[in-house]
Length: 324
Ligand code: ES4
Ligand code: ZN
Image 1 (cartoon, rainbow, N blue to C red):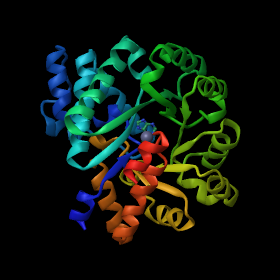
Image 2 (tube, protein in one colour):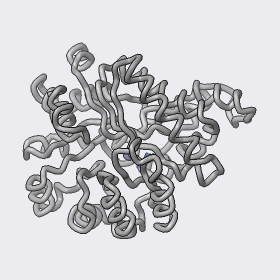
Image 3 (cartoon, helix red, strand yellow):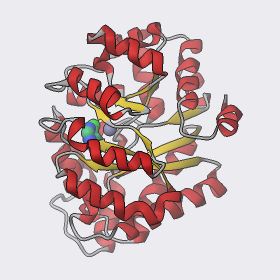
Image 4 (cartoon, protein in one colour):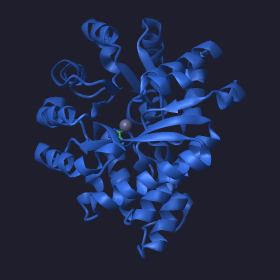
């Protein structure tokens, strides 16, 4: 089964590029930028990756990305991920980036996006992996800052396929960003957002995302299972869910494998992704393997998960069909 998973053509739709920063590259970038790290070795750094919920993870995640300063840093980060993706037979990826996590500490938007964009072009040519960028706003910052970031992105619109919303969900409902999402839609961006697993108001947040904001996808979203009306809505609109089993195991009590099985049985377009693989110890192949271990999925079911993913990509129909 490991070989089958390895050989399966894959699609990754929920991947934070800053969450792919492996300790080895973190050390290399710190050195290049003349920065000191509070760890003596890669092992010591990995040992400090202890989290059991979303806030404790986010603290380590934002701390870690401070070594990213220059255009080549963002290029190297994305290229390292895309090499890993190519090794795992990922043919296509939609990659989240968090511009505000960088602009808020003085790194210009232009530096971030140029580095990422250059890597995407090189990976397409050199590795045969196609990818697009999704710009995420940090939901624990003010909506006005998200709007300013949206406006700052407009000169680069051709390089960004859509927008997302991530970071700490507690007290930061989708409705807070209604105006940002409305403007993004007018500008031609496609729309997704995180509705993280087992949040205080998961059901209400998912309802707002779908009914009030009108998102095209939901990131995570497993909690729709607690409300038949949401299941019906997702099925009726063909909305895809980007689930991340190993990540779920880190920020909640389990991988939510049974929930993912149930979603598959209901015919929801559920997909399997890696979220922050450098922190959650697993790229997309490891996520598929972990889920397979738990659910004894058949080859056909694993292939269906990847077909779901290619089907809900934000590619034009003819390019989608080439993968299906
Ligand atoms: C994230 Cl797991 C998760 N949840 C919310 N925001 C995030 N940003 C990066 N990983
Ligand atoms: Zn995520």
